[in-house]
Length: 329
Image (cartoon, rainbow, N blue to C red; front, side, top):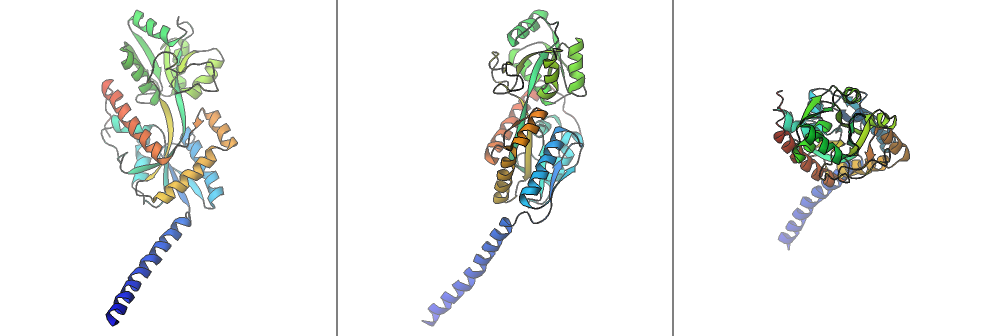
């Protein structure tokens, strides 16, 4: 009997600390956040990612009762700031809000300071914005089919974009490669100069982000042919998607991606996703996103991870097939 009692006592002493530790761990997770949370933006202040981060920081601070603040770490096309976030403690107190550079940079940089599939885990893809195909008004084309015929007939054409390896550039390369067209890419230092070049007729075709092109299309300065989203957009409801225009598999969007170090506790990731998803659905958030030319998404962590893997593979193939030069550190 004494031996049975000793075994029972030993078992009790073993189980009590384990149970207490588990409860304590749950309490810490439930108390999150209990200090300020940093949102790293790997770009300079004033851009779309920065605007989105500040909007979320304000709302998360209000909703969760602790300060969420933006830390701009610009440089190397987003690699520096993303690397900072990737090496931060995986405790939920460092997030990074980046763009589609996250799925493009691994293919165009010889070395980056993080592994996009191992070092960081997505909380959500908060919003997306497609690209748009526009042409100079003097170009005798009013549809994507007519554009394809015109390029083939002319023998060679040039298209403008906001810069090498930007989402619009890769969108143009995907279009060119898919249809075996002879088109030369002309990079500019932003969407504004690229669109002005198209208006002037220097590069009569332009692949750019949707937001900067909309006012020019509405003003009649450029003719829009298609948008690279899966569905039409309210800003230009008569503008067909590329699939509707007869060229499928051309979807290309700039994504606003929120990630955390990969070992961040799952319950904290889920909490952040829930809170961000609530913010994204607010009317004032939707209105702000609309002015930026973005559509709210707030995909789940699992769906976001799947899409990131797909985008990494897709753009790597485009970079390889288009023979875009890899940039050294």
